Image 1 (cartoon, rainbow, N blue to C red):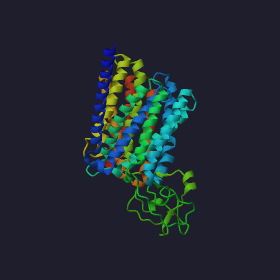
Image 2: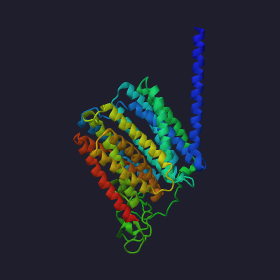
Image 3: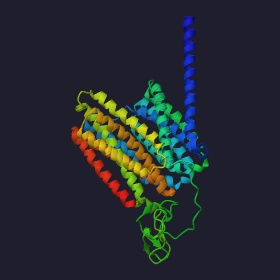
Image 4: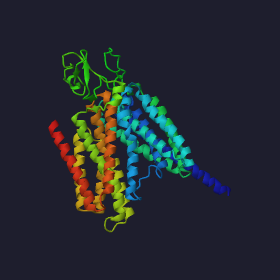
Length: 491
């Protein structure tokens, strides 16, 4: 017995030492990756490390609720999927109209904004652990609030990246480092949460809580360069309503199309005034006097303001939306199709697993490929991936088989990742810093809306391979033609 005990103890110590050495070596390699090319001096490495920890927490949170409010209902009746799609869209209702402008207004405190989103998720994860153990009806509302904070974090960090990118690194490469850090963090978080979750789903939420707390500390201690410079106070102007500093006032580069009033009380058009989003425009009202916006807190809350973005951003949003639509369609349509009409000679579980693995591999490959793109134009990369996805969808419609499904899964995963990386780089380079959060909030909302539309399309279409994949191919063709025409116009 003593001999057996000694052998067991030695084996345990050896295993612990092996895991410890592997963890230490892996952490060293990750730090070297994050700090390469001057990222340690610019602050990008600190942001990447924070994102890895935050992604680990997100993975633990998702695993905890994977069998409840966040479960993908492919095994249920197709009519019940509508509730799931509505649930995934709910957090975005407040993201674009409320959270984006708020984050732009307080961009001089971006570190605290990032920390606040993480601290809120830490608190909600701890509360969810108790609610889940009790089987409370508050699980869904609290989980949705946590998802809102997650999207706010994504918007804020995306707006912070241009401020910490060192010379010699493109925005696409910087964004790809974030994606790679996210993949690593999610893998580690999934493993830890999966092991701890064997005790119960509430315990993996406690793992998420601890990771969010660590991420909160990392966010607050980020370098000051992450924050935008506070703008000096401007001379007060006689407006009909009090102005909101940086949001909805005359200095705001993001909005157009609302009335302006000059000192003589005459209405002007915002397009008649100098605007960072529309350079070279004279800043005068109708009578040649200085015009200013008749917009403030009350007016901003009750007016629908149109966010003005460059043509390049709109085109990138369209390409990214096509990627998300294809992802949503393939996720739900393939899930239902495999149970009804799997490829000939293949079991439904095997076929569905192969497509899922292919999509995951493609997504990871897209992240690593983005790190190797160099100085290639982001929009051309996104357009090329849209063309490849269209060809793959057409081939699947014409030659439905396991091979074409796997190829489509690979291309869809890579397209979704590269499309997001390119869109982020274009927004960061082609829009004014004062409107980054709003543009990212709008793009996140549109991308999620495209995913929901794709999922709805995959739910309502008959489970006929050529019809389903043919329909999504037609949508992709329209998107491709529109994107190419937009690129030709802007050349």
